[in-house]
Image 1 (cartoon, rainbow, N blue to C red):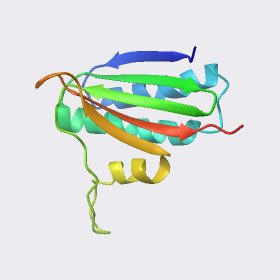
Image 2 (cartoon, rainbow, N blue to C red):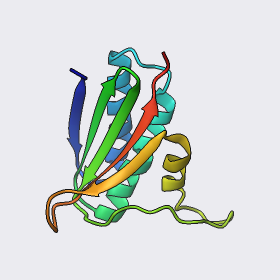
Image 3 (tube, helix red, strand yellow):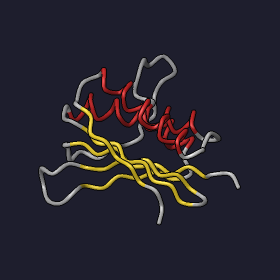
Image 4 (tube, one colour):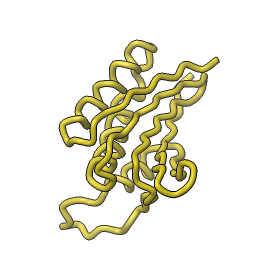
Length: 128
């Protein structure tokens, strides 16, 4: 059985830091250091999107299999994320581009029927 932990956070900007710490602490406890920086960065991006665009509480789940790490961020919005081209001088909007560029795979799915929210996830390869 693969380990899996999750935790809910309030939909406030200050909770993004707590979500990053949760992922970092989880990976340290599991002895996974190789992908921690990328996992924490991408968790930060998805958590920030949850706070900015959903404005609801969000849940971060981390699971690990022998060759991959999966992080999911669930929130209360049905709107699925998209990557958009950005001009070099744009101040924001690059979060999903980072996820797309650094993760082995990523995706999003709506949860249940309308009004139930979504889950956005990414996968990272584990060395070994």
